[in-house]
Image (cartoon, rainbow, N blue to C red; front, side, top):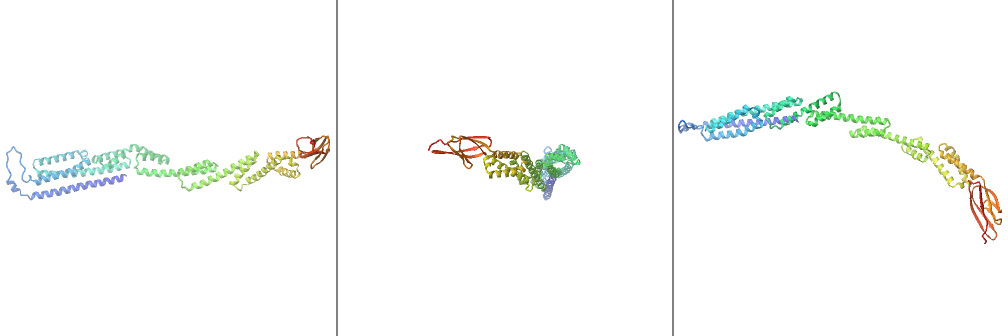
Length: 476
């Protein structure tokens, strides 16, 4: 973050200052040694060897200057200056920041080189010492200017003051054009024109307590400038509050839907709340309410279908739906009574259908008594089932028809003796009318010297007259 970058810049400044101090110490030590070395030389002997030349020739260096020691001292001083300071000039942008000082140092360097070129090694070395001192001061001033402008730019950036921040970061970059820290700060400053309207809108939304609007503007701010810690923290806070509000809204809407009996809508709100915060205990409470509602709806729907089945006299489906109700609510008395009634009516249907499937069994006294008992039971039940009432009427009519006598006209050849097994004799007749109740009978004809004949007949209950012909006409 910016604080970390400032700390890095401070460390770089400390490193540069250390370089400068080391250079000063080295130069100071170097020149101290040089002065001591020069003072120990015997210049009197060298002066005696001075050669006088004519006026047109350049003056030869004195013996005190024209020595290998002085020449080597200058060479080393020049190399050290170029290595220690001119690199700093480039890093600190001295040429752009202080053109006057930079020009003066170039001139001092050139003058020292010129003195060296004329053999004035000692003077050249002294010029180098002055140059080094000026360079150290200039670099120190440049570093101070960078630190001051960088700090101000940082402060104005933190306060979102674009014009001031931009001015000071540009000043800082004059003295340190290679500074990655300053470049990073400048990049953030250049984002301010785009950020300031968003920040203002976010602040307005905050004052208006419009969290969603504030969240949206802060999100745009962080998308443009991810390193804005203050806004990032606020965005996180707002997002957490919005999440909590959204969760609570979904939970509240879910309970409202439950109270309104809208299970599907309640489940939808439950799922949305779960997507927001799956571990909240409110979810389990809401789900219990939804499950209870769904159970009651299942019971109500099954009971409604059962009642509809009863109205339609569909007791088979009514039994199924009453069973569904009891599966969810075993103590439901309506379903219990409905199921009992459905079973009674369905059993009656089975009994009636058995009689109708074999109606002539009703001619039997035992079967007839069973049918009468069924009719007695059906009398109280038929008020709930039209089909039972219909079948009751049908069975009563059937019993009536089976209880009346049917005219049976028997025709023969006056030679065959006729009897009805289990009933009685008819005799030898040409034609005779008797009365029998509907049912199955066996007529037997016999004649001497002729084979006997059996005739199985069914006297129907739905006819008034039944005729038959029987003779024994096959000799033995």
